[in-house]
Image (tube, rainbow, N blue to C red; front, side, top):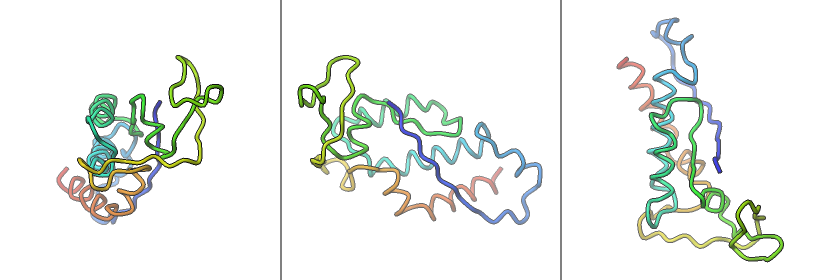
Amino acid sequence: MSITFDYKIEFDSTGFEKDLLKNLDEDSPIQQRWNQIIFDGSIGYMPMITGNLRDVSRIANGDFKGGEIIYRAPQARFLWYGKVMIDPDTESTFAPLGGTKIVTNRDLKYTTTYNAKAGPRWVERAANDNLSSWTAELQRFIRGN
């Protein structure tokens, strides 16, 4: 299970070389840095008890190249939606291998022992709180390169 998000940013390109701007693609160092900023900036909003979601997702993203961030762990979809998911046949939270769970209207309860802001849709909530600082950090990175 992987989850993909699209975020657009705007920054002042005054003074940047045209060659730099035309090389902004999904494998560019700028895109790589942006993905890392988003991932790292969202960790404090990510559900965490053991750190498995964070650790497996960090490994799945490698060096953060490419135009997406991957959240990969067996529980990623379950935690993202913040709703209890069940097997439609047994109504159990466990599904057989290859089975597909359905989302219920029952909310998950997140522990905030490790992350006070832990909860569903962690990237969206983190972006709502931090997008301007993330953008400023990316601008500093671009200026430094």
